[in-house]
Every structure is written in C-alpha cells, then in structure tokens.
Length: 393
Image (cartoon, rainbow, N blue to C red; front, side, top):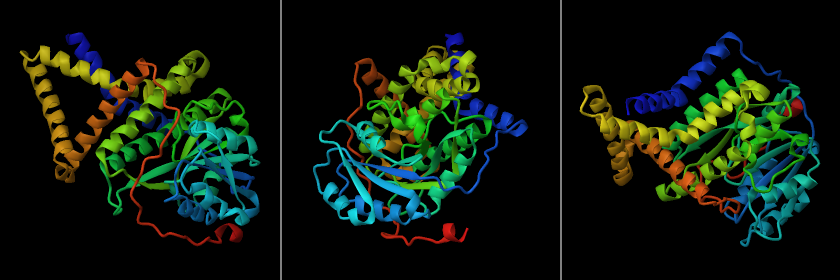
C-alpha cells in the first residue's frame, strides 16, 4: 500500500506540475523558436455546424470580417445534416462567397469536415465551429506561423467566459492548459490542438479519418510527417462556458471519450525510439492525464488504508476535505464564487468525467455523431467591421 501510495502520488504530481516544470526548464535552456513572417497563402475556413441557426449568422459575419485578403480566403460551412434553419441561413450568404457543404445523413463532425476537406481549395485549412468567435487579426496571426517550414499545425488559444464576460472555473483550468501548450511549443510540439479553432497544412489531411477527433488527430498527423504543432497566444478564440453543470459534464465525457479513442488508436506514437520528444510529451500530457483519475483513486484508497500512521492519515484527511469541498461547490452553486471552491469543483468534475469516459470506452462506445453544446450568447458585437491592417502592411 505504501508503494502504491507513493507511486500514485508521484505520477499525479508529475502530471500536473512536474511535466510543465520540465518543459519550462528545457525551454529556458534551449527553446525551439518559430520563424514568423507575414505570408498570405490561400486559406479555406471550414465551419462545422449542426443545428446552429441561432449562431451561424453571427459566426459568418465575424468570419467575413477577419483581417485577411478576401481573394485568398474561402469559407465553407460544413453542415452535419442540420434539420433546423442553419442551411437556409448559410445560403443567404452565397452571393458573398460562402459555400455550403451538407452531409446528406448525420454521421458526425469529422465526417462532414472530411466532406469539406475534399472540396477545399486552400493550401491552409482552418477548422472552427459556430460557437467560437475569432479576434479580427486571429487568421493572419495563425497563418504567419506557416512561414516556418517545421510547423505543420497551429492552434488558437481559448478564452472562456460566462455570458457576462466573467472568468469561470473552466476558464481557470483552460488558462493552465494554455500555459502548458505554450511551454510545449517552446520545447518541441503540442500533442493536441484546440477543437474551437486550429489551422493545418492541407497536405496533412490526405488520410482524413471520419471517426477520430480532428483536433487531436491534427497534431498526431503532423508528428507522423515530421512537423510540429504550436499554439499562438496572439490568436484568440473566444466562447462562452456552458451555464448548466450537467451539460458541461456531458460535454467533458464526450470530449474525453473522443480523446481516449484517438490515443488508443495511435499508441505507436508513444515509442521514444522513433518519435523522441513527441513520444515523451504524448505520454506525459495525454496518457498520464487520462490515467489521472485512477491514480487519484489509488492515492485516496491507499492513504485511507494506511491512515493509522500520521503522514498517511493527514494525506487522507486533506484529500477527503478537498473532495467534500468540490461536492459542496456542485450542490451549492453560490459557493463557487470562491476561487478555491471553484477550482476544487472543476478539477473533481474533470476527473469524474474521465472515469465515465473510460467506462464508455471499455463498453465499446464511440462518440461519432454530435450535438453542439448550447451556450448562452456572448457579450460581443453582432457584426464586427473589417479592419484594414493587412492592406496597409
């Protein structure tokens, strides 16, 4: 039990603190820099949509207002057999160059994205969704990274707020994730891209999978072809957190199930002999992160069985208090006004969602079809104005 306790504790601490520290140390000594240059290759933006009638007009307006030469930009809305007014609203923009790619049957996000990839003309493909609003300069900032021949994919950084623009528990967690991504890019490569928006060289999409999560697979495809993936902190994608905790838990379970499925289908990338630094990062960031709830359970159970000894008793008491605080935050929502309660709740919720995702994976479930999470409206302008900085440059 003592061996189990210390192994589990060590791996949990390494996963959330040790790994970023290793990245930080290596990045300080020998960082991998990105050669950025203002380039304007042809770009195809693919907006995945499934029953987004309440958001699609705003999304298209924001996309049209992006600071990028219009003649180098193609915009495709990939509708996963939407059965509301989404497709009709998209057709209203046909005279402004918006193309509708509709899946005849609902078969999932990656399937309809694949249909759009097959007809896209851009050298760079940008994948985003209807709920994410990009800053006007986000596109050319993303594309500038492709001047570096070692870069295969670039991710935006996520900015998550509530309907009033205030930070949320998820927002704090995402800030941590964005910090880790920045360190990963300086060390070598990201192991996963932002599902809200990422850009990738079209040549890396030739083996498109209609079933595996495109954001995770994007980074893995790049690694297999000898490219690296990075995040650009200057390119921001903004969206609103879910108001319902039950909806948030369901979304997390779906996300983790998709991630576990991708990892298990690409275990060969964990071979350090063939994939070096990327294998180390994939094991540290993804594998150990997905195993974290089991490690935390092992820590709790072993310390509970050893609680007769002072050190283990104190550890068990601290863990129990942390989880009770998380439960209290889930039951009494106003308690989440405290940052400590908010963090405890969200961390515990994430671990629970991962356990549930592992259970579904063990039962053979796959998350292919999707229903985008319904988020409250963001406090943003409905129709931004196109800036002229690109033309001036």
